[in-house]
Length: 613
Ligand code: GLU
Image: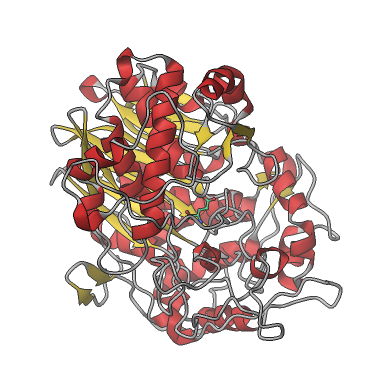
């Protein structure tokens, strides 16, 4: 197993990336001709499964099956989570992969503690305040098409370092063994489903703009057909290289040089009209990348302990603050519409505080934001009979005393350009270890740029920074900084033992998807599958409050009486029509596990257990 230097960066952070001399990708079976298409069968998709001995749930049946095989071979939850994530890099390459980042939350059954890894993408050192200003015009680049499909929005990837860090700290298998099933899947191929076809088709213009991306993901410039077999031998070779040399080979050497060069000079085809601004990433930005281990956020909720992801993600503080506000109400005794009213208002308030106080910087007032005192004064703002007109103002953390204090004036609510297409997985093993892991390349298809010949897309995560520079904004662009995320992998304990682990993709809607599932399950008495399937609303302190059509059908009339104006998700200025794609595991008595994924959103997810009950 890999071992390497640990460079201490500060009390709360460790560099966990090891750097070894890279070699050329080993020539091996990866170039062997693929098997016949008819031998590729999609494993069954089951949204909910109960059983014992370990469980895996993700959006994708191939990935969940690989995670399950690792558990069955004696791997632990961390081994299985990394193997599942590597498989998602094959089958969900537009949502995750080596070119992106993510947040890994781990419950260790031996110590009974929750740990986190922040593997967020990082701005290169040359990423100055004006990085999003077009030097040709002096104006900010438009978000589309310029910024999204660009080198300038690519952050230094954190996913490879996260996998290595998780395995080094808590895994039981070598990286090579954990990557092998995904490399085999990439070679063997998978059946293109409607989601993969549609996502490729939606990206066809961007993918056609780059020689490397067109070659990898398009067939004569078009999305591969539903039912055809998609193979990614480039990625298989990259996984082989990393298996042989460790993740250091990603951050130094030929691959790192190629990656940085691709960011600075994207392989643009002559045929495109897309402007594709260039980035400024250097090999030394990659060499400096560090995964950070933070203490998780924590709030108590109805006698349970809820742990989440601290900054650079806003997930833990925003979900936690909203829960603290909601805990002040006896939701069980209320009508469904009253409950939704309070959930919406609590989320608006927590989002206002997120905008004002949370970013990747020192001095974020996590303790105050998650205190019951602060929740008490924020809850004072809610009128049970009348809705806010968002944006609401942020609270004042400097004067928090639990009374109904005057809020500060700055709402801090800028335009929301976070992507909605990340991926999430939940794993538990027989020993009781649990992983909740959300990983992303930001937009569906990230920056649209494949590193030539390497089989993976680069992220556009830096568009999660505020687009306009403001020195008072905690999410302003700075060199070496991580853009604020909404990713909210969450583990809930009772008496130090897991009760529930959950997470979702969906940009800023992640926060309210996770919040909603917790409330549905813990307060409203729904089963876990019902809590996940329930229709979703996505309050984020914006003027437009978007909700899925089923939510509108159920609640719009009653909420209108309280003054809420809802818009159908998917309409211009709202979130995607389907909000989130959650996965979760519930821990029952005597080791019983309920592994759950979406029954229908994104085509339905895939849950699996080691032993069916
Ligand atoms: N970039 C988003 C974030 O970190 C995630 C995008 C998504 O969930 O689709 O919050």
